[in-house]
Image 1 (cartoon, rainbow, N blue to C red):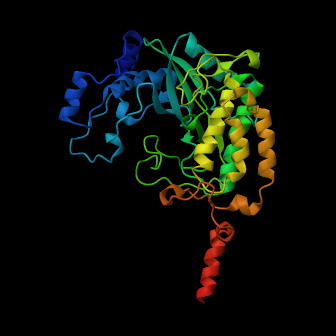
Image 2 (cartoon, one colour; image 1 turned 45 degrees about the vertical axis):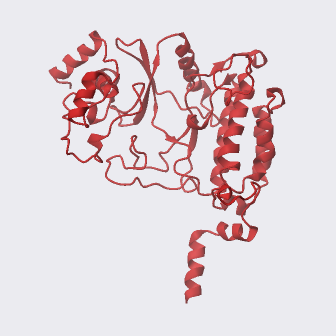
Image 3 (tube, rainbow, N blue to C red; image 1 turned 120 degrees about the vertical axis):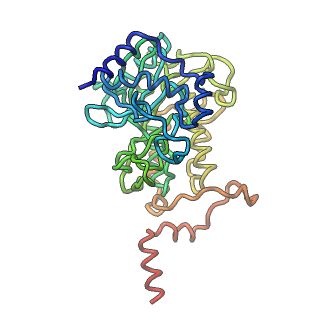
Length: 383
């Protein structure tokens, strides 16, 4: 049960505007005295903390509770109590009071543009679209923040798709398969993501990190007392998810789904009205080109498909149905040796080597042998 003090704070949230979230002169003065003091963003979240807990059902970390005491200036900077939220006033992690589930809260404007994002997320998270091919980050909850003109979207706490790095080619292939599958599913339902880039793909890390990880430093434990232990993707397969539907669009006629460019010329090819569905194809192709074909050795088998996905003329790019079909043919042709091969970062630019250079076949074969077998062979050689 909330205390009388907490109820007073809840009523305060419901009747007064929140702090601006900016680092005002008062904030700077407080931090000049003690760097562990709350910044402007954190003061705004502290204002909402009692209401979030007792009205919405979400608990923020202890740093944002009304009775939190600023640690001494001499407090060790590596303690959790001294870690600032530097992600901005529109996003924060929380824990659902009812079951302890760790979630992520994103704040959006309560207007027409953001309403479209909310409706698309609701549609993709609906029971009617419960499908293994649906790789949208599920929308857990939606509520209005009092006196702010904003709404809060609640989603599970996810982890960036690339952290930790992939161990084998097979793990990378499964990542590509899932994001192709997820985009195909969206396009089948006449939804274009519009920004399916590096930062907007994550994954549910629960299988790999059964004990969780800290949202401020994802390599630390939830208790901030050491390195978070985890399994590999091979040991505990994961599901990848698309996030951030701020630029998404839903339409009945894909061919007529023209819209002005939303992003810079480096990310959108034509400076004219464009169809967002081929643009999604380009984004995914560009991601694979940069992160795998150029970033690792041994992904040359993807070059032709990716080259077609990133053609300058949107009309010449394959549809997601065609991308998925071609990728299935590619992945099914890969041997178990190739799938088990450890991924290796490309370092040829440091040695002025050609971009099509690859690790010699004999070395690839040795690397594909499970580490345990290699260790056993080394042991017997010593004997």
